[in-house]
Image (cartoon, rainbow, N blue to C red):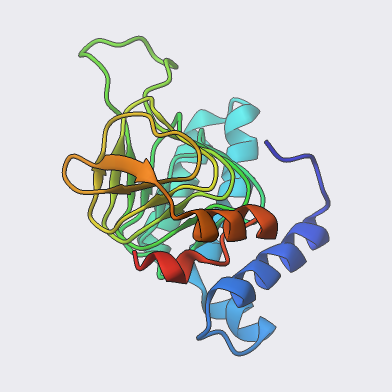
Length: 202
């Protein structure tokens, strides 16, 4: 997960990430004021800190208010790395024990949901882990305590319920993992992010 960095550094980094991955962006001011996915991420940093400080009710109440404003629901207990980007944002749900690495991008209507037996004790991990550089297409559902390996891509509307190794492409219901095309995977690895995401047509 990410090292601790200053607020201003993270803000500049987030805006640069949005410019990199959204060809519709025109200026830093536009990103700062109208990108609801980033607003939800910025709010999560505040409410996540409150959650870790054990101010559970205030953290949850704040997160629900942000959900009302942005259409993005991020539980304050979720762990999120650097340069995370939510494109379009509306309908995204990220559960309490989800873990998201650095350089991850997700589209609208994505669910990182929990799966556990009834009466599972509080705090048990039941949501997915997305390793660094994962891209998740619109409408995909990733369910349970599973791991999606670094540099992988999840196709639109896929339903993923099993682990996937690094540099996988996951499509279908239920999703089946297959290796990414070597050229595309090498581009992702070399970039340190997911600049080839458009080539995956997710």
